[in-house]
Amino acid sequence: MKNREKIIQQPVNILITSSRRPTKSMRTLMRDLHTVIPYSFRINRGKMSMEDIAELASNLEAHHVLIVERWKGGPGKIEFYKVLDSHIEITFPILYLSGVRLQREHKIFWRKQRIRSRSLAVANPEKTEYQRLAEALSKIFNVPLLPEEETKKFQIYVKISESKNRTKITFFSNIHNMEVGPALYIKKVSDSDLKKKSC
Image: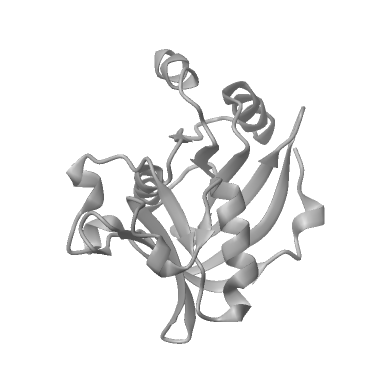
């Protein structure tokens, strides 16, 4: 509770949590995302219901919730929710993952640098088919969507590209001038389930 009270004194844009009984790799992915997404608040799910998550997000005055879902012992899906007056409602995009590359697997282990990102941008993708996804992430993270060459004044930027016939979402550090992750390899981007979930 003390940690929650401390964080409430700071602006919170997005609450990061997981499905129940997260694996070690899911918890690591949550920590990685927390360090690169400004004004995020990470909490272990524990026994919290979706209604409890909605209440916490509302108390934090967060605008969105990010939930890492489990599949076959690891992170298999990421869902985003809008925080409304009395509940949360799932929103585009729903990211089905084919794999992840955690920060510790990159040349620079960003989280061990003990730098919390305070500025983030989303780079305009080269492929037009990724434009809707880029616009959605820009809105959810509450950060600008810019040409990649204009992201250099930000600590971190998000890049969406194609890698080995898969969509890749990753984070680049302008401090180190290299990719620091986490990198998300996307099997499918969906909005087909949007009408099924609100809490």
